[in-house]
Amino acid sequence: MKRWYLYPFAMLYNVITGTRNVSYNIGLQKSTPFKTPIINVGNLSVGGSGKSPMVMYLAELLSKNYRTGVLSRGYGRKTKGYEVTNYESNYKTVGDEAMQLFQRFKNKFVIAVSEDRVAGAKKLIYDMDLETLILDDAYQHRAIKAGFNILMTDYNDPYFKDFLLPAGDLRESRQGSKRADIIMVSKCPPDLTDEKKQYYISRIKPSRSQKVYFSSINYDENVYSLREELPDNNLAYYDILLITGIANPKPLVDHLAKYSQKVKHLKFKDHHNFSNDDIQNILKEYKKMGEYKMILTTEKDYVRLKSFDYIRKLIYYWPINVQIDQQQEFNKTIEDYVRKN
Figure 1 (cartoon, rainbow, N blue to C red):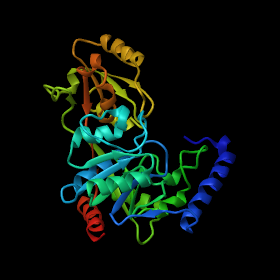
Figure 2: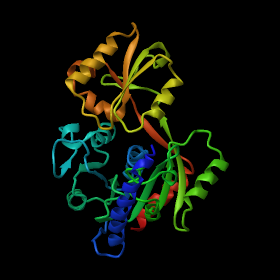
Figure 3: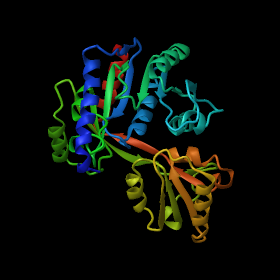
């Protein structure tokens, strides 16, 4: 959303963030380097750009051959400091994104949170003897000198059409894209043409050292609950109450529309901390529906909603995945970086 009346404040914000970036570029502020190869996944804008599915993809890819860790801030948690996610963790102790990763992958790789990324990275790498580390949403956290940066940008809201906060949604100027090794255009339509790809590349204007890739979101064939997958897996049979607390639910809403027209959507803000009143309102809406009904949510929202005993058995979630164009080339680029470093 563009807010032109706030443009003077965006100019001030540009001075502040620009000065900070220059101070890191010339060494006035310190970026801590690591011997362990670190991949940073982030974006220039606030809101969802597909970072979480990309982190999942990278961690699953690299954990096949390397001792891999993921470090995030743990946004929305009620604790502070360094925490490693385990079977005793919940979204209040480590945040919903860390729990989403652990719910799917368990101990295939290590997942930790720390608001102090430098201290957290040092401890996680040392304690777990990691061979590679993935940083979630740390593109502006320049206190860590990541060896490889992946910049995510939403196909429907690319950074090159956006403006700085508060006039637009950019955390820093478009010039920040020059720090990326890979620019990933996310949430692309499945029928993306070569002409459209070339248009985006021409607007991004990558340097010789940068690569541009395109990815799309897809969903598992099945939706799942605490107990099992949906028995007949035919969403068209059901009245669906869709619950979302993510930055951009539109891809899920559009995808669900292919399967059912009987959908009521209750939309909450990103990382929403559901209250008892929220749950009672959800149940009230659920009771209004027909005989065949279900509550459907995202994988990230599920880790928060399932903490409520009186709703957890009613909820189904739909796992999300990322499909990358030129996948083999992308995988090789990532694996080559880790292997060589």
